[in-house]
Amino acid sequence: MKNSIKVERAKKNLTQAGLAQLAHVSRQTINAIELGKYVPSTVLALKMAHIFETEVSQIFELEEEDWNNQ
Image 1 (cartoon, rainbow, N blue to C red):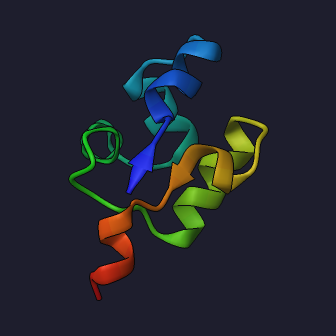
Image 2 (cartoon, rainbow, N blue to C red):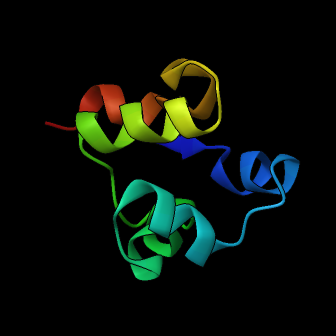
């Protein structure tokens, strides 16, 4: 899954730690999401969309391989 968390953070001038604090997760969680090593829960994805004042689909995007994995 692709994401634009880093870009959205830059728009809001937020560090990973700052976003983590707003979303009530660790900085390591934000880092793992940005690197594509962790897929956030629906609740966390919705929180991040709220923080960035956008839709989840503007932040997260499925890739071809995501359709084939279960």
